[in-house]
Amino acid sequence: MGKLFLVPTPIGNLGDMTFRAVETLNEADLILAEDTRVSSKLLKHYNIHKPLISFHMHNEHRKLSEVISKLKSGLTIAVISDAGTPGISDPGFLLIREAIVNNIEVNCLPGPTALIPALIQSGLSAERFVFEGFLPPKKGRIKRLENLIDESRTIIFYESPHKILKTLNQLIDFFGPERAVSVSRELSKIYEETFRGSLSEAADHFFHHVPKGEFVICLLGSQKNNR
Ligand code: SAM
Image (cartoon, rainbow, N blue to C red; front, side, top):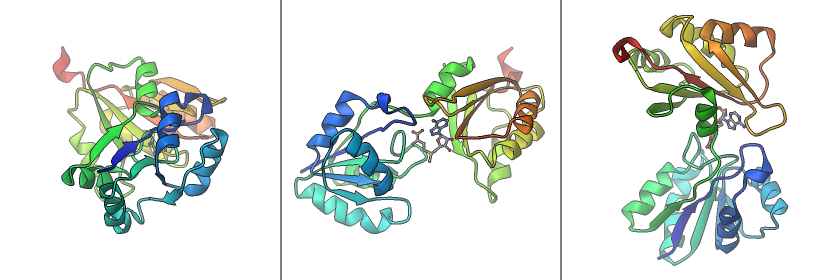
C-alpha cells in the first residue's frame, strides 16, 4: 500500500512553506494539484521536480478510482491545492474518504490555512469556533444564516472581494449592526489588513475602500446565553 499526504502550501507568503512540506513533495511519486499552472510555479521555486497531474472539483469524481489504484499499487501521492490546506474549501475530501475506506494511510501535514491566523488576530474568542467556509451564493444561503442566529461560538466565513460588501450587509440583517466582527484580507501578503469593529463599521469601511484581495470574516457569536 502507498500513502496519501495532504500538503498545505502558502496562502500568499512563500516563506510559509514548511521544511516538511518540501521534503514530503520531494519524496512523493506523484503530486495531485488543483491547478497545475499555479502549482508548477511553487514547485519550481522549491526545486521540486515530480510528475504533476490535475485534481480539482470538476474532475475529482472521475479521477478517484485511478488515484486509489495507484495508491494500492504502492505509490506515495501528495495532494496540494492552489493555496492553504487541501480539503479546507478546496478539493481533497472525496479522495481522503475513499482512501480511508480502502485502508490507505492518510496524513495531513500541519501548515498554512487562512482561517486560523484570521481567527487568532481577530481578538475574538478562539476557544470555541465554527468554520462556515463560503456561504452558498443563492440556494440555501438564507437557511445557513438563519441556522447561525443563536450560534454562541465565533463564526468564520471565507469571502471573495466582489461579494464581501453584500455579505457584510446581509450579516447586518441577520445579526444586527452592532455585532463585533473582524475582517482580514491578504493574510501574510504585503497589503495585509485586519479591520475590527461592528458589522456596520466594517460595511462602511469596505464601502469607502474598494475591497481587494481575499477575505476572512470572523464574527462574534451570540452573547445571549453567555451572560
Ligand atoms: N485551502 C485554503 C485554506 O486552507 O485556507 C482556502 C481556499 S479557498 C478556495 C480561498 C479562500 O480562502 C479565499 O476566498 C479567502 O476567503 C481565503 N483565503 C485564502 N488565502 C487568503 C489570504 N491570504 N488572506 C485572506 N483570506 C484568504
